[in-house]
Structure formats: structure tokens, C-alpha cells
Image 1 (spheres, rainbow, N blue to C red):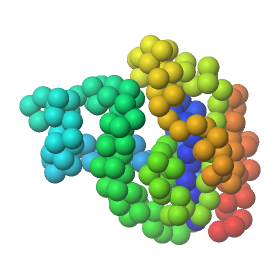
Image 2: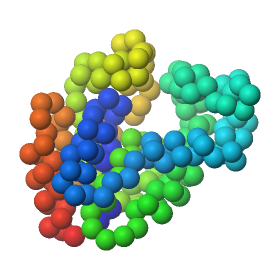
Image 3: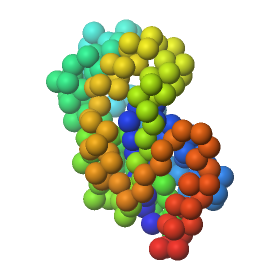
Amino acid sequence: MRVALTGGIGSGKSYIMKIFESLGAKTVYADRLNSELMEDEEYLKGLEELFPDCFSGGKPDKRAIRARIFSSEEERKKLNAYAHPKILKKMAEALSGEGVTVCEIPLLKESNARDIFDKVICVTAPDEVRRKRIAERDGVSEEEAMSAIAAQSDEREYLREADFIIVNVGDPTAEVGKIYDALCAKE
């Protein structure tokens, strides 16, 4: 069974993924697939053509790219149109096989990838919790963190797609376990 795990930035998707891993689920991370692409020369050449001022000596300035895409919807769409098909191709390869595979895919709606998954889990958390997590994790101000949150689709969009919802406040381990058991029973 192919399961998408999605939610807004800072909701704690990676933490939930670790719980699924500990329960025995196979896992795939879209961000890791993107990181692999960031090592691919051909991919980087195309990215540099899109954002030439965010490169120096053929190397991307990830902070500069991040600042651009979180401050401009047009720039974000340009990046998504370039990156998503390549990430989805790698993802489809990784999703083959038996059992439950949970794929962390932050931009499920934006990547138009819903159809490749059997079930969707949405992870959510209050904005103030998300803002603090982002600021801590990324070493940015809380204002920059709020800009990142605001740049994404409305959380209601994620929730509409969900077969399961995890509110990631406190210890969600038992809730994740129940969802995993339900997924395994349908396998």
C-alpha cells in the first residue's frame, strides 16, 4: 500500500515518519529524493538556468533559492514545475514493492501526485508550534518562519485530501500506531 504523509511546513512530518519507521513501515522522503537531485549535474544545470543569480561557481545557494520561492508565488511555481516531475519519477521507483510504504511528500497537492497513493495522512499542528519548529530547525527568524507557512497552500487543502489526520502536539505515537495497524489490515 502506498501512503502519502503530507502537511504544512513545521507540522512535524519527519517526526511522524520516524514513528512509522519504528513500527516497521518502509519509508520514502521526497526531501531526500530532492537532495539526491541536488547532487546531479544535469539537474543543477537546469536549476541554474531558472535561478542564475542563486548560483556561484556552479553551486546553488540554497538559502537564496529558499528566500526567492517563499517570497514569490511565480518563482515557487517555476521551481515546482521543474522539480516535481523529477522528484515524482524517483518517488515512483521507490514506491514499488509489497507492504505499507509511507512517503513524506510535503507538497502533495502542488505536485499533483495524489493519484499515485492509496491513502493520505495529513499531519497538522497549531501555527505557533509550527513557527517555533521552523525557526529552530532552519535557524531563521519567526517572521521568516511565518512567511514560509503563509507561502504554502491553506492547511484546509491538505486536510481535504486526508484519509487520516494526525494532530502533532504531545506524543502522537499511539495514534500513529493505530493508523499503521489500520493500513496493515487493508494490505
